[in-house]
Length: 450
Image 1 (cartoon, helix red, strand yellow):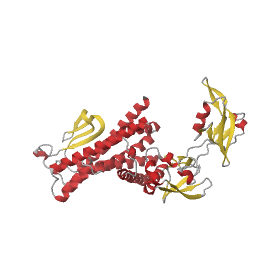
Image 2 (image 1 turned 90 degrees about the horizontal axis):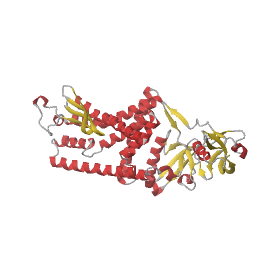
Image 3 (image 1 turned 30 degrees about the horizontal axis):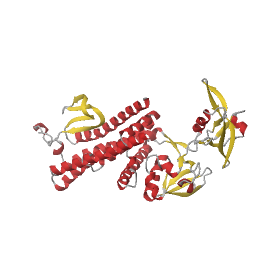
């Protein structure tokens, strides 16, 4: 219940902030262009709170349904214009001014993303080096020769320094031709090149949570490497040594030190088979797990401490005030292009439409990121803001992009589209959005049901 409430609150905050930024773009550019603003609303439906301000008596509202918002300009198509407001209606202003107002909403979303990334880069982003974790036998990754600990230096010709850029380029390469060329670096600094070939299986691997499982490897995490043996502990008595990497306990896979603690904790006093890697070779040893009392509860104790030497895989991405602007703009630009490519490939069928997320899934991501801290939540807001900007620029009549198309046609032909053409366009736009939301809700429910 607590997690659901956190997700709901985080979702409402996220949507409210991003919609306010989007609509403020329309609002402020409209004001600068000489248009009269009748209402600025965060949310739809009945206004809950209304403030009337300024010479134009603009209504500023918080409305009942926090899933969007709008700016309402004076428009002669919706009613008569008072003589004092002549020339201030949206449709009476020059067409370039109208297009600028329509563009301003998505542009403010992109500007917010740049600002968010600027703050993140300025403060420093703890970054995990893209590297290979456990590799599944007989998988695409295994056939390509990937090994535990390999650092991914480049995907194709693009150098990668974090998992975000790595995943973007893996998707691009895989969807383009079913092949993912990688440049890998081993612990001793030696580089080699290999290619993961998935062929016609590429589309399936674009489904949510299928990429790593389908390719057959996991992202590197701090492994269950023994950094210290406790004297007279079970591990020391069984012959385990510092540097051994434990990979399973009684057949239960161990991916990291947290998995090891969880696997041992419930096996106090039991004899188990522990698989581990030493000097590149897999070995097995039988160990009787020790016991310890914690708050009146008996827990298993292996008698080891983890290795703390993971500095080569973690680093802090941090830039100065000026350099952060360039990095933030680059991140926003690459994320925007990737979003556009994903949308295009969904249309062509190269990428699964299961990637379309609705409000339920977005709320879950919002809650998860909020619980991980302000930096994670800010990064989440930046990504959603980019998606919101891209979505609104699509040439669908009920969106900003569709209205820009209408205005461009009017500029080219010297007169507006006929009312019938505009109505047909609006109906098409509403149908397209209903279909999109249907896919999104279906995907959300399917994820919940597993």
